Amino acid sequence: MNRTASVSWLWALVPVLLLMLLGALPAQAQWLQWGGPNRDFKVEASGLAGSWPEQGPPRLWHRPLGDGYSTILVDNGVLYTMYGTETEQHTIALDAATGKTIWDHKHDSSFKRTDFGPGPNSTPLISGNQLYAVTADAVFHCFDKRSGKVLWKHDLPAEFDAPVAHFGYAPSPVAHKDLLILPVDRKRENPPAGQPEPEESKDEQARKVVAQSLMAFDQMSGSVVWRSQDFPIDYSSPIIINRDGVDQIVLFMRKEVMGVDPDNGGLLWHRECLPSPMENISTPIWDGRDLLFLSAAYDSGSRVIKLSGESAKPTTEELWYSRKLRILHGNAILLGDHVFGSSGDFGASLFTCMNIKTGKAEWRQRGLKKANSVYADGKLIILDEDGHLALATVSPEKMTIHSKCKVAEFQAWATPTLVGKTLYVRDRKNIMALDLG
Image (cartoon, rainbow, N blue to C red; front, side, top):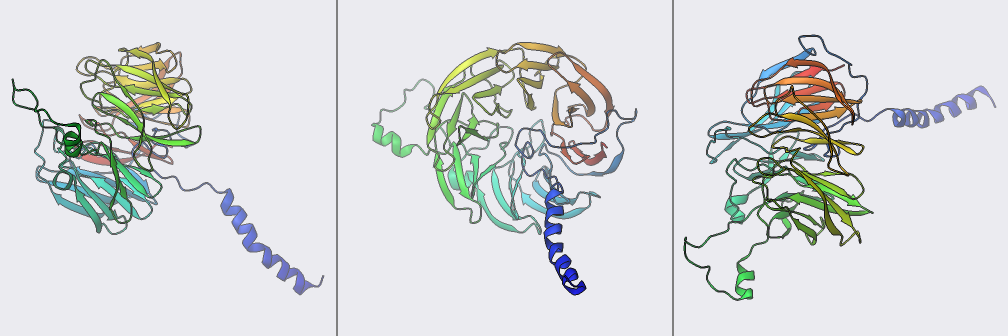
């Protein structure tokens, strides 16, 4: 082979070598929806510090934001979240490296302020170049994520006669194929006190019922693809699980839990939760096989529903019920056969480890108020409602807190977001980025 041929042969290999190199590099970490990459508050990360200085991890930037509990999304160096005032609901994009505003969309809000502020409560979702967000007064927007331009929107109360919950709309949408799926309630008129409900034929009743516990919208056009089921919804967000190759969307509602076909909304299974929780806020956890974990506070507790039988039409069984773990508005994380979460409502908060198969509380530990957490690199990063950030390792035997510091203010109820070695935290006034490496 002469020199010219050798050089030509080497140059021909360059594209192949580049593709091999790029394939070996890790994809840029993202956080595109409520709960992170898999909606379970666990993320791939490495190289996190095993402890922090007394004053806490280094702060990369900090800035005012606004009220609300919407968590933070991260996509290609841009943060997305929502905040509110007494008269407005904002969806905002910020530079992840500096916190500077890229765009900020204002929506005039009719939602009345509550003791816990104007919201928003729901977390947006990113799919492709679109960002989807629902305000506290239940107006559903689709944005071009790069410019903030509104591509389409639905006023759920005005268009679908959907009542807004007392604390404002809270569920976070989920994507399935080319659909966006979210809970939408309907008005239920009660007869005046002391008067019986009017007698109607089943056909008359059926015509009056608008089944929309879940609604599916086309991602690009916003058109309604399906709406189904007729159970009162609550504040909990839906998840999509897969059992033996069959996808189903699971929603924890006011008094029950159900699984439906995400392609058409058809009911696969349904089960009442007794005793009925006062409010269902936390997100269900799926163990990847057959167990579904649910938890609520007040007069309720935790339970596991076991799915058996045919994948497309399973039977359900309540495996256990316990009041020793009662999650109010926080999240829980499943590691192996154990669930770790913050238990409590109006009394003391106990960080608890519970066996998902038996319901046995392995341990309960004081030291943190009601809290949310993220799991990465073998560690739990815990943010309690007083703004204390803790770094811990957990096992079925114990929890060891390696570092603890104060980074935020009271009612820091938004779950933190971890991408790479950067943790994004917000409370009802500020947003910040912390270096955990």
